[in-house]
Image (spheres, rainbow, N blue to C red):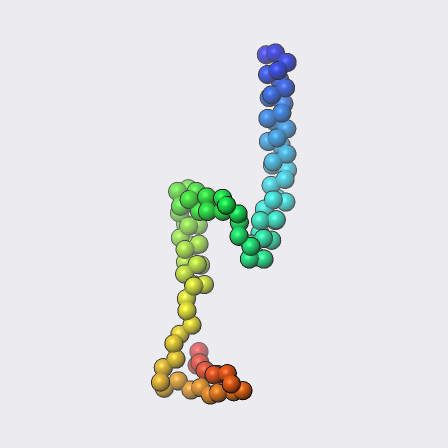
Amino acid sequence: MDAIAWTILGAVGAVAITLVACAPALKRDQLRRQTAGSAGGALAGIGSGFDAVWRPSAEDANAQWEAQIELPAPAPSPGDGGSIDDGSIVIDLDD
């Protein structure tokens, strides 16, 4: 192999090693942004497509998690106890 091929091979290897070394920091940054509530950017939905194909159990768990978060509060029934406290309606629920 000539010098150009060795240079390209070395550059590809260096990039691969750098990405592997930086992966934990990138993951921490991504988790920090997710917990802060910011969007993942323009390509945020690509990962869910990969999960659906290669990790269907993770896709199912994510769908269940989203369904639990998006559940609305139960509507009050006429027999539910409640009161008005300083202009706010207070509904007492028995768990």
